[in-house]
Image (cartoon, rainbow, N blue to C red):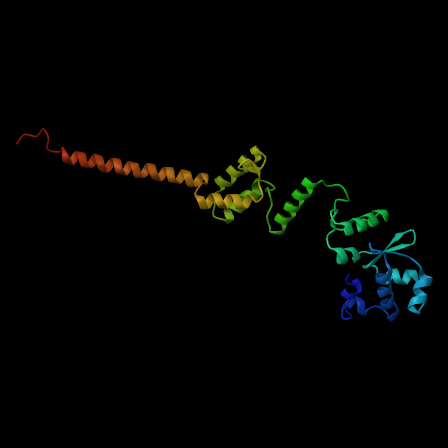
Length: 234
C-alpha cells in the first residue's frame, strides 16, 4: 500500500510553513495511525521516537486543516481514508474492515455522504445515475416553467413549446416515454431535431393548408379556362 506521506511534497506551501519538528510529527502520525486514519494520542511515544518534545495544542493548531481532535484521546487524519482506499464499498472485504473501524470511532465512511447502511442497492444506483448526470451538466427535471422557457428561447425554440413541455411533464410526473427523464434538455432538443415540436407541427399544417389552397385555386382556374367557351354561340 502506498504511504500516505508520499503525497506530501516539500514544495507544498502548507508543509513548508511547518517547523522541522512538526514535519517529523506529520510523518510519524501518518505512519502510526490505524487503517481509518485515527491515532491514539501518545505524546510520550511520539516524542521518544521523533527525538523531540511536542505540545498537543501547538500541533493541533499547526495541522488544523489536516488533523482533527475527535475526543477520547484520539486524533484523526481526515484525508487518510480517501487517499488509501478511494470510495469505500461495502462489497469489498478490505473496505468492510475500514468501514467497521470508522463506525467504531463514530466517524463517517468516505463515499457514503448519507451515512453507512442508509441506502439499499436500488437507491445507490439511482444516486449514482443522478451524480453522473449532474457531473455532465444534466438534470432529470427543470426547477420551474421559467427555466424551461429560458432554455427553449436560448435554442430558438418558441415559448409556446416550452409551456407545452412544462405542462406535459408536470402532469405525467416528469416522465419521457413512461420512464423517468434523465435529461430534460436533451428531450426538447431531440423533439426539435425530429420536427415534433408543437410549433413545428402547427407550422407544417398551416403550410400544407396554404399549399392545398393554392393547388385548388390553380385547378379551378384551369377548369375555368377549359370551359370558358362552352355555351357561347358563334
